[in-house]
Image (cartoon, rainbow, N blue to C red; front, top):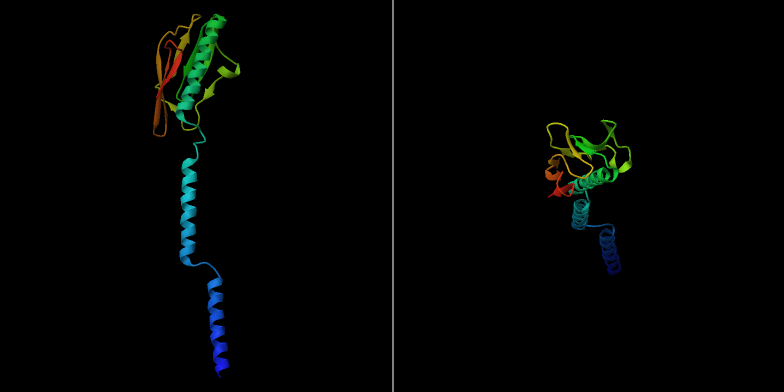
Length: 162
């Protein structure tokens, strides 16, 4: 009888061990899920905007305007930049008319997705053969809640203002 009682006790201990070895507890699973959630949140917050920063787009536009100003000086003929809410482009004066520039750096460009120039109508600034602009133009760019201003026609040709 004592042997049977000992066997039963051993069977109970084995069963207890087996259930403990079968899987994870609910607390352990919840901790793992919380850690995965925190890691995912950190990864999403660290990812850059695929459209790039708005200030980078403004800097790219200003650089292209400066290149157009330089093209006016080097080519000895007027070059203009036009801006619309959807994009911008560059023209040069030939034979008494404005002709779109076909070279890659000065081709017509669209603002990236979500970016919009805040203008009521198409605006144009013309650089003469000495690099002087016929007027100043402030182009406000907006994307989501971010807004910057690019000044076109100053002494540098164009600059980005925060």
